[in-house]
Every structure is written in structure tokens, then in C-alpha cells.
Amino acid sequence: MTYQDSLEFAQHKDHTDPLKDYRDQFFIPEVNGKPSIYFTGNSLGLQPKSTAKYVNEELQGWATLGVEGHFHSNKRPWFEYHKFSKETLSKIMGANPSEVVSMNSLTTNLHLLLISFYRPTKERYKIIMEAGAFPSDQYAIESQIKLHGFDYEDALIEVHPKEGKSTLDMDDINSAIEKAGDSLALVLFGAVQYYTGQFFPMKEITEAAHKAGALAGFDLAHAAGNVPLSLHDDNVDFAAWCSYKYLNSGPGGISGIFVHDKHGLNPDTPRLAGWWGYDEASRFKMEKGFKPMPGADGWQTSNVNIMSSAVNLAALEIFDNAGMEALKEEKYRTDRLHGVSAKKS
Ligand SMILES: Cc1ncc(COP(=O)(O)O)c(C=O)c1O
Image (tube, rainbow, N blue to C red):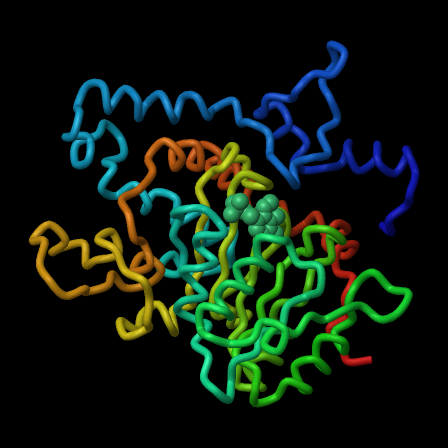
């Protein structure tokens, strides 16, 4: 069925939406005493009714077990807490469980990933981004370029839509990549552009970046839980998301990262390290010399924020029950978001 801009079409989609019953699993804010139609999940997703139960379980564990909760918590020992979200996150991201981990917040994670994957040299130091990227990403990139001693104006290439257009065509992106050529170190895009809503063809962008000898990373803030993703098969090098938008995990909710196994399983991939990324089996020997966990887990720096992760787990359970297949079936939505043609025009 083709998209129509009408009330009948909207009502028809509501009635036939395979996910419609899930609305009852969330608290819906009221306006003038009536449940609102909430269009701001792109900023802050609604609270699942199950959230308090998940948080209370951990508060209870803390009250009754104290520090022992790290290893003997009723259901989910805190020592392993980051593992409980892996299975569902891997389905949402289209990744291997080893490639994803939830931790920190989004901009912090972008910095941690840039330290690993923006490794500029005198010859290859430029970064391509979509023009008008979310300010935090712009500031992160600006500071990373300066941190490495390069000139920001020279090192950053922003791709603008053609005159009269508000979204990019793949040939805009391809020509910027081809033009940068051997000077290109990294392509960093928002997978779904925060302002225009354009869903970029991640596979094609990644391929084009790799062809130029550069890496490709994505900010998934507006994509995670919103559109189908296949980060592993698309050969994306790295990505990070926040969970407070489409993943319904509360204000400032925990972020997460994807590191492709081709980098994550290599212990020599450079990174900023902390004890929670250290080999789990020998972590408490407290020895010198950093031995990373294999996969994305090796980028963890600090022990897990349990309350934030509990909120995240409550929401992920809903995603798991709904199934990512159902999300994929909402194809009209994806087609509308795909403003970019993957083919060269
Ligand atoms: C695309 C995008 N990137 C980055 C951020 C910043 O996220 P945080 O404050 O969690 O670091 C946001 C926040 O809305 C965003 O929309």
C-alpha cells in the first residue's frame, strides 16, 4: 500500500499495525485529561509500565545483599549485568552479541570510539560528515581533530544536499568520498539524520569509505530501535546509540556501542582502557598490564550503572517480545525514510 497523507490512511495503519497492542505497555502522558498522541519519542521515549519492577528488583538486591549483590543478586548479578542486554541488542543492531555492549552515554562513547577509529596520519586525516549533524557530534569531531593537532576547517568535510534539496543523494556522498581520496580517514554519519529524518544507506556509505581506504562509523541515536539495522553484514566499523529515544530507557539512559568483530576481536586495536574492559576471569587479580575482553566488552572502562541498565532491560524485554521482524514489516515507514537512492544517479 502506498503512503497517503490522510486521516483514513492513518487510522487504517493504526488498526492493522501488528504492534498496536504494545501501546498499553507504556505510560502515556495526558493532555487536558486525555491520553496524548505522543510524537516526541525521537527526543524521549515513553516509560514502559514494567520499568519500576526492574529497578525495584535491583534496589531490593542492594538493600538485602549490599556488596554481595555483585555476585549473588537474586536474578542478575551486577558483575555480569552488561551481558543481560546483549542478546536483544544484537538483534536490534543486526550484530553478533560479542559486537555490542551497553555503557556510558552517547557522546562519551563516540569519543571512546573515535580514539580507536580516528587515527589520523599526516597524509590521511580528513573526516566526512553530513552537513547539519547533531551539534554534539560536531563538537566531538571538532575536538578530536584538534586533539590530534590538525586544522579543523581543513580536516572536516561536510556533505551538503544539492541546491533546492533538503536530503542527500548517494552521489553527493560518493563524490565527497572520491574527492577526499587518500586524505580520507573516516566517514561518520548519523544513520538517521536527526533533523531531516533521512535514513542513510549504511552499507553503501561503508563500502564507499572502505574503497577509499577509510573507516565508517555511525551515530545511531535516531536509528536504534526505530529502523532495521544490519551493522555486522553492512561491515560498519563502529557505531554508538542512546537508549532514551526509541529504546525507551529513560532520560539520560545508558548508551551502547557496536564494534565490528574484525576490530573487536583484535586485542591490539588501540583504545582508552579501564578495569571493566579487562579480561573478566583475571580482573580481580588486579595485575598490571591491560588485557582486553574480546569484542565490544573490551571498550568498557567503568563498572556497570545498574539502575540505568535495569531501566534499559525493562524496555529491551518489550522489543524482544515484539520481535525485530515485526519492526521490519513496518516497511512503509522504512521506505519513507529512505530518502537516498543507493544507486549512483
Ligand atoms: C544524533 C544525536 N547525537 C548525539 C546526541 C547527544 O547525546 P548524549 O547527550 O546522550 O551524549 C543526541 C541527543 O539527542 C543526538 O540526537
